[in-house]
Length: 280
Ligand code: SIN
Image (cartoon, rainbow, N blue to C red):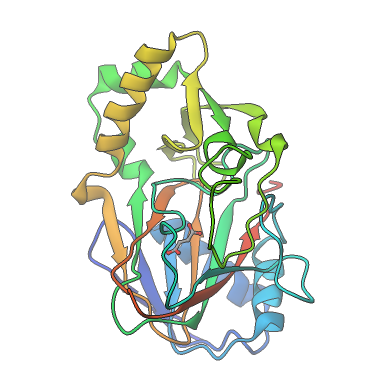
């Protein structure tokens, strides 16, 4: 099987054809996909007829399942969640802020897979921001400053009972399960060398970062806000347009992502797994 890789021409992302992900995932194929994934950070596989079994097989082949707090899985599965918005839903969009999935965990997932189930005719693109490029483009003195900083990550703003998806979040079709454990914090360097490529990447952003270790709150917030604008500049962004029968996988260690709207009156559903942290 020869993979055809069409580069997006944007800050990251590539479209991969010439393979059938419902078929055998040989070690050689897995290696080729992983190599392309590390290089392009976001891979889209169009024209794949995959069911939930095939999504699970693919995720296992790419590194195994990651931990997924705060979502109830879909019925009959332990590791698949539905990213779902019904056509008449009026609750605020899910995941409309830049983030890296579950960055507040001790071992955040290396990647995420999303399988198109029900794709609206317009809108609902996912944006990705290349954080190796964002870091590389900074002036040297700023890089040195950021390399010294440790970020305090927490899910509290989103998933604590008082958070965005907590008790006041009514009418949402997604099975989100807020919990007091979302108030826990975990430290990660603000600049993390990618464990597989060695590239230095800005790791996560406001939303899941609630402070900087040893820095006064207002100063930390000003720094993080300023940095968040830099991290999502147009030149670092890839806009992904969904198609039916498409699987996408991205590298949480190297990109931020966010959902977008623009599909009012239409249903949107994707099945999601996370790929476990790389064991080395
Ligand atoms: C996500 O952040 O996992 C969801 C992205 C999307 O709905 O486009």
